Length: 208
Image (cartoon, rainbow, N blue to C red):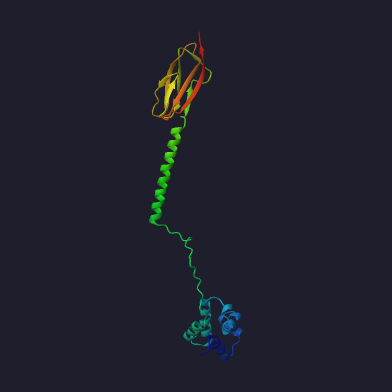
């Protein structure tokens, strides 16, 4: 039985067409036409393209298209399938309920862990203490000086050995009695863990 190349070549010769004539009719490159007739498959595009070429050539040369296709499939060498024994599926990403659950649990764990670390760091650190009055070197007249400022809401404040109540927003205020011998005001903030922050302000008592 004739090959597809022989069938198409014979049909072309019978019609007294040159390869250039067929190229003009089908718009298929001369080199491809020659490769099909001589069955140099390695010089041709992939099979689907060659199949389209053969159908066009059959119509142009008066060859039964079904016959040409059947002979082509018989003559065309088997295609090698590149089978990867370990297919790479890493590039495929699919969002799944399991992934959503895992991410949700991860976010919760990170949040809880971060909160615990923050609380522990706060627990072991000395409390913040801000004193707005008295200022360093402030001149005080009269028998008392107003001490006020802010600290952590759970800290304890002692001013010159006198406990001071801290409000819910961390602010405190107290009037401390002074004498002409009073030189300093000591403010001590103590955290729940026993860490202390001390601020000492020097004052000057104004006497008449």
